Image (cartoon, rainbow, N blue to C red; front, side, top):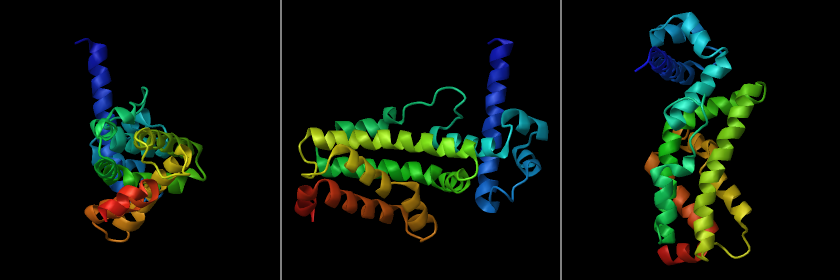
Amino acid sequence: MSSGDGRTRRAAASRGRIADAATGLFVAQGVPGTAITAIAREAGVGVQTVYYSYPTKADVLVGCLDRAVDGADRRDAAPDLADQPWVRAVAAEPDPVRRLFLHVRGAAELMGRAGPVLDLVRLGAAGEPVLAAAWDRDETRRRAVHRVLVDACDRDGVLRSGLDAEQAVDLVTLVLGPETWNALVRRGGWSGLAWVRWAHRTLLADLVPSRFEADA
């Protein structure tokens, strides 16, 4: 391994520690209430290392989102979420009811990791271009994943009559979005399983009502 490779790996490891530390502090104390010095102390790095890794607090929060969604930051091109195993399983599943369940369960796992951070990004996006861009980028990626589900239902001829694909993606994005996860699970006290069951029933009724009636 070259010295350059070693520096790259050490820098990536530092960014990971910083993002992990910042996530806990941001969720517990809020972004404005968290000092960079506190993040550095929690991560076990120097303050200058934080600034070198993430020039602003908004950049730190974007790093937290990257870590929650992808397990790494997005200094390089973000991987396609549609390549994740659960999304491929959704596309390959022939039964529409189980296909929807697999999709909702995968979305719940994603929201369990990223929902709290997405809440913070959404709140900060109005006044911070870095966060607004991160929010838009994440929503675009999530919509691409939901389109995999919709296209599979459309391909099989089970999508509700009169519902076009773009409207269907809108519905899935709304039901499986961080807003509903944070409202019902984090603030409403629902279990993740209760959210999955509700989202599954809702999407069955909206997207493939004939299968919802048969499953009821």
